[in-house]
Every structure is written in C-alpha cells, then in structure tokens.
Image (cartoon, rainbow, N blue to C red; front, top):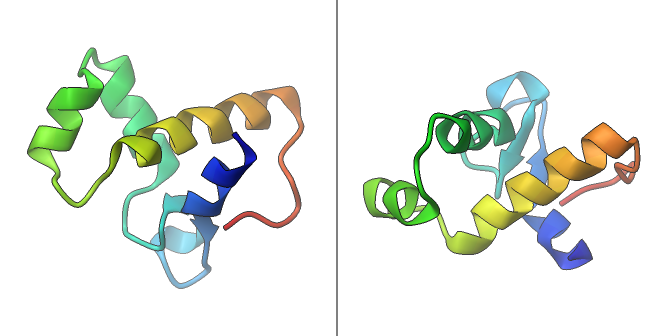
Length: 76
C-alpha cells in the first residue's frame, strides 16, 4: 500500500498545495467527493481516462492515513 502514496503529490504551484494525484490538477478531495456522491470507480475512470484505478486507491489510502494521523512527511 505504501507505493500508492507515490501517486500523491503536494506542489505549492498546483491546486494551492493541496494533495493531488500525480501532479495533475486532481485533488484527493475531488476523488473523495466523486466516490461519496455514489460514483463507482469504473464510472470515474470512464469519465476521466487520464486517471487510473491506482489513483483512486491512492486517494482512499491517503484519506485513511490522514484521518489516522499517519501521513508521512514526504509523499509522492
């Protein structure tokens, strides 16, 4: 699971420094919003072909670590 965190990037020049996926303008919070709205992973991937299944898993893993307080100082 730790290698999923390499997909999470924090860059002050992208999305105001929020955690994003692979330095794209896809904040983790947007992926969580899509999932919490009821979208299935397959639907998200169909609608946004630049994303990969592992990106969705990385967003979920990052959120879990964030809630538990176990976010590594360096991600991606």
